[in-house]
Each structure stands twice: as structure tokens, then as C-alpha cells.
Image (cartoon, rainbow, N blue to C red; front, top):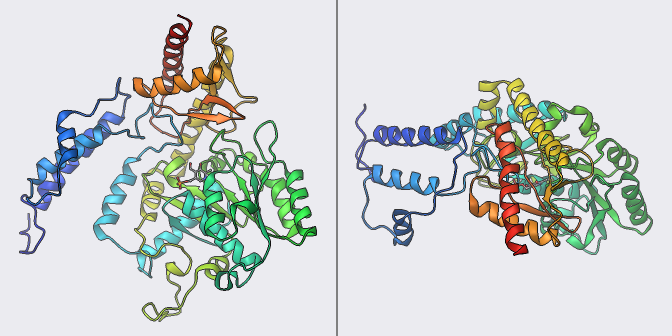
Length: 474
Ligand SMILES: Cc1ncc(COP(=O)(O)O)c(C=O)c1O
């Protein structure tokens, strides 16, 4: 062990000892994620006391502080647990956690040219593009789908209205098109970009919750005839509500014919293109797409990728020449193609995960999640007391409703059931309002989840649902 130099901010134990303690805590957490736990622990007295503490003016021993941190984490809702089915979770893939530790140790700033790390980011961008079948001319790692989407739309806005980034939109009449099921990060993006959410055209969907391309074409043509400039079409490849994949090929044709930028929000679903390319046909004709590696590529948050076909579009939207950041060697700094300035080395976890597992293991994990969704759908469909949506799941979201004959208000019942399931803690899921009705909405994006976990979900939902129905009828 090398002696640590005299300097401020020293711990009461050596760095190596602190790291060894942290390593032990991480290994324990990983062990506890391997299987479901039968219940979620409540906040204990120690944690409650910690939460009341004022700003520490005296240091506590680092081992004690680390143990307390681990206790807090253990009493929090952790998405990597195999029976976490709420929202669109994440898995905290181990190699991604290790990559984060390494990346944060070096604390490289990906805003400016960082030599090897910058090259690795570009390489990881290419790998993600190749994995999903998108010809990425450029791209960047961002903090999430929200930032990836706003980044792509900023590029689309500048392409549609050159100079608008400096001049503003003025009185220009503009529109962005999406389906009625779009994620609200798109709504926020058009608000931030000055396009205005009242200029977001919500195109109707079909019975399988996919955008109707002919309705899209009509909406664009109506706007063009009325002097409105279309800025972009946003297709969703895996909607947040139901996992629907908009028909990308038909939408791409509508866009190409009219010269409109096509952005594909694949934050959740696009990794499935690696195993079901036919469902995502047309992705190679998009101008940009978003993929959250912290969703279905399993790595820890926050890690998303925005990919664009042409680098010039990102430079057009984000390039700057500042006195404190000269382009000495004609290289572009990452900040010339991204929205964020200081950026951690997020790409490392995707790069390391692809290297350490190989792409086939990722495809296998995604296939397993798709299978789990089909399993839940078929089991729920076979029962008398559960309802399913029209058509099998397109991806790994499977809305189900507990609707035994004895229940009159099925919406109120499922609302109460979702809350009862969360309070119970054996499985964790969320509810969603789909076509005006309340559904339980499990989503499978965790490589730790097993068939047994999927079946447990239905067992718990039925048990608690029957209890609630019984109490209501008493
Ligand atoms: C389709 C879609 N787009 C965008 C987002 C936003 O992603 P993030 O939470 O990473 O910002 C989500 C999140 O669930 C999503 O499902």
C-alpha cells in the first residue's frame, strides 16, 4: 500500500481500505439482486435518524458512513431487483457499475477533446448504431432520452429553418408531428426549442396504438398548404404506455417524399431491433434516433445515446467558437455537437459492456425479456379474471387488468390494486391510463427476471385483487 500524501480531504482510513469496504457492500448488493426478496424493508430507526441530521461539522469514520449509505440504498426502491416491473426500469448491469467507477476515478471531461476517451465515445456511438441497424454518422452520449430527444430536435429545427438558432423563430409558423402516445419528453423539447407544444400535432393511432402514416401525411400536407413549416416527425419505436412500434418504413416514406426530418424515439424499444429487425424496418432511413442504454441495454443510469445520420446537422445546431475554447487543431470538441458542456465518460460503460459480454449476450437477454412478455400475455389471456389489450405485446410491456365478474368499477379496482401491490412489496409495478382505462402495466427490461418472477406477478395481483374485491363487496 503506498502512503497517501499530506493534503486536505483525507479519510480516517486509507483509500484502499475504503474501497475494500465499498467493494464488499457492492458484492452484497449484487448478491441480493440475484433473487427476488420476499418483502421490501421499511425505513428503520437508524435511517430515520440519519435523515434528521444537520450538515456534518465533524467527520464520521468512513466505514460507518459507507455502511449507512448502503443501508439507505437497501431501504430504497432499487430497479435492478428482478421483480421490479414498474415504469421502464433498469438493471444496473455489473460491468456498467464497474465502468462507472473507473470513469469517475479519472473524471475525464467529454466536453472538449479528451484524446482516447473521445475516440471511444465515437466508437461506442458506432457500435450502438450497428447494434440497432442505424447508419450513425455521428452522435453523443447524453443523460437520458429527454436530452437525446431535445438534441435531435434542435438539429432538425436548424435544418428546417437555417439560422433559427440565432435569429429565433420570429413569426415563423412551424409544426412537429408525433403520435398521440408520444413520450412527453418530446412535448418538453418543443417547448424548450421555442416551437411550442401547441404546434405539436398529435397524429391518431390505430388499434395497436401505432401512428397512422396516412393521417401523418394528411397533417403535413395540410400544414404545407397553409404555409406552416414542418420541422420534424417523431416516430416512437416502443411507446412508454404499451410498447407500440410506429410503422417506421411507411413514416420514413412520408418524410422522404416531403423532405421532413424523421426522428425515432427509441429510448425504450430500439435495442429490440437487434433481435426483431422486421419490426423496426425503415430505421435506417431516419435522420436521428434516441436509445437509452440505461433501459434495454441494461447499464446503470444515466446513459442514453443520440445518433444522427450526418454530423453536420449536430454541428449546425451546436457548434460555437469561443475564446476560451479555440479549435487549435481543427478538431471539433464534443461540445460543438452536444447540448451539455461538462460531460462524464458515459460511453465507457456501453463500450466495456459490449466488450465484456459481446453483442450476442445482449441479444439473448433482450429475447428473454420479449419471451417473458409473451408468457405474461398468454397466461393473462387464458384466465377469466384478467383482461389484456388487443393483440400480443409488440415489445416487453404487457398491460393487464384484474376484472373478475364481481367487480363493478374495474378502473377504481385496478387503481387500488396497483397501490396495494406497491404497498405489499413482493412485486413492484405501476398503473397506467390507456384509452381512458386503468391498467396494471408491467414492463420487462431486466436480465435478472425469470419466468418464475413473471408468474409471481400474476399470483400476487390475483391474490391482492381478490382480497380487494372481497372487501368491497362486504
Ligand atoms: C419513449 C421514451 N422516450 C423518452 C423517455 C425519457 O427518457 P429518460 O427518462 O431517459 O430521459 C422515455 C422514458 O421512459 C421513454 O419511454
